[in-house]
Length: 279
Image (cartoon, rainbow, N blue to C red; front, side, top):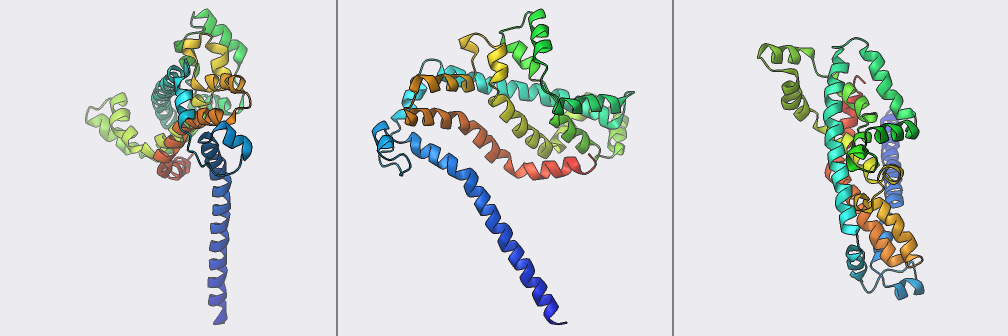
C-alpha cells in the first residue's frame, strides 16, 4: 500500500515530462519556419544559392531596405494597418453592443438573432450579394465599402455573449438606478472588464483582416488602396527565384501579426475560459 503513492507520483512526473517534451516539439515546429525565414532574409543571393539552409554570415539588411524602397510598399503597409485598426474598432464596438442585448435577452427572438450570427461562422462569404450591395451603394473600389464588409461579428459574438452571461444582472440594475445609460454602462463598465475577451477577439480578427487577399482583390481595384498582402503577391512575380529579398518582404508582412500575438498572448487562454464559462 505504501508503494502506491510513490508510483502515482512517478506517473505524474512522467506525464509532466511527456507534456513538456510535446510542448517543446510543437514550439520548435512553429518557431523553426520563422527563424529560417529571418535567416534567409539576411542572406545575399549568392550566399543563398551556395547553401540555402546554412546560417547567414553576411547579415545583409540591404534586402529589407530594397523592399521598403519599392514603390507602393510603405503605402500598402499603412493601408493594411489602417484597415485592421478601423475594422477592429468598428467590429468590436458593434459586437459589444449587440452581444450585450442578446445575452440579456432585452429584445424578442434574441436566440434567433444569436443563431444568425453563429451561422456566419460556418457559412462562406456570399461574394455575389456582397458585390451587388457594395456596387449599388456606390462604394465598389473604395476603402469604406471594404471596411463595411469586414464588420463580421462571428466568433467574436460567441466569445462576448458567453462572457456577458457570467456578469450578474444586478450590475445592470445598479447602473440603471444610478442613472447610467445602457451605452455608457457598456463602454465604462463592461468593456474594461472584458479585456481578456477583447484581446482574444483582437488577435483572431486582426489576423483575418491582415491576411485577407481575396476580399481586397475583389473590392479594392485601385493600387493606392492595395493592402500589403496583395503587394506581397506581386513581389512573388517580381523577384521570381531571388528568395532573400522575397523572404525579407514576407517577414515584414508577418511581423505585425507576430507582435500582436506577443502583446496579447497572456489574455488568450484567460479570455477563452472566461467566455466559455456560460457560453
